[in-house]
Figure 1 (cartoon, rainbow, N blue to C red):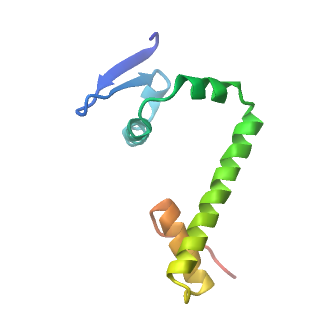
Figure 2: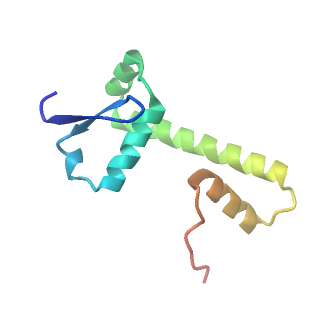
Length: 108
């Protein structure tokens, strides 16, 4: 590929790094490589479908997925911990989705 660099990973996965990505900090590159590795081989037919979608449609699907994720997290956390306060439920859902503590938000 023109303008790209191939790097082999220890698990045998070859990662293509574009010239734009070379400008990114190493931590961001590591996250991108990890994401690509977890995705695995993409179905060419699905890739073609995504390429034909308008940005608005892609965004609509993203919001639908996010909404579904939140509903599942809220529902299961509420079932597993019915006595939680709304604040603690929010913290648990946040940690479950983001894998970290909620950022501090002033309430007053």
